[in-house]
Image (cartoon, rainbow, N blue to C red; front, side, top):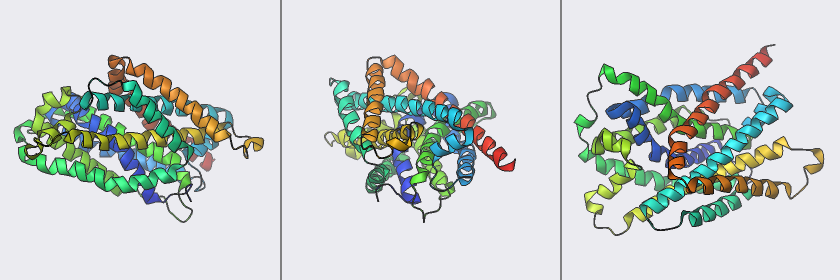
Length: 367
């Protein structure tokens, strides 16, 4: 059934959805704060991520298996406060979806078609994601399973063939004076991964009844290891200054591989692979928001109405489109969202709201 996925499929979906922002932002942002020790910041991100994963797992375990985070929020906080909190959370996901689409169009235009109109790409992406959201998370999970080997293959290809060019002096030594910046950069690395864990918690109610909620420890260790390698090859090849100032430092490594320098338009193929994760991420967030809106405004009379979901999806697309088109007209606003607004809001949800929900749930169970 399309409405049910396995625990493994959910984590595959989370991995693919994370790839684009992970590799677009991770090497550059950690270099801004930690300099040449950015790779160590990526490793330290395992600490807050383990905390978040434990919080989400314990929180979901307090409720029936068919509950996702949306149902948990309402049950924990009560209907008035819970529905308001869930509505605000859902509106943020729509703003984030609009940002992701605009960011993807900017990357596509800047890298491949410098004179193209980004609004065309935004419109097409919104249409495709809207159609996907009308279905369910099942097809998105299966598409992620199909493309995961290809995406990881490209990433490992770049990493392996870039290791020979790593300059150790760009990475070492890590001095005590660098530790404050290194620790400060760890939440930046954790934010990109943490938000897909939260999204997975929203979708966990769709896991098949015979599937346990899989322990995410091995998944997290693998993702962190990949992040460390990406930071090593990016900073080790470009240096901390270039890694911090370039828009897409990891993508540069591919074009600089000697045996690909004569291949015509190879970057078009690779960037296209990075746009697929954007599609998965936005479509997944549209599915989450649609489910949340149906949950918030659910009545017994509306349960059999076939038009509720299409109307909810259309409303989601309109809001995401307004955000995407607004950001497309201002490069400075897009950069501010990427560097300041999105990380701050995500860290707020991940490390303040989720622990608060856990504490309230635990106290309610005890008393």
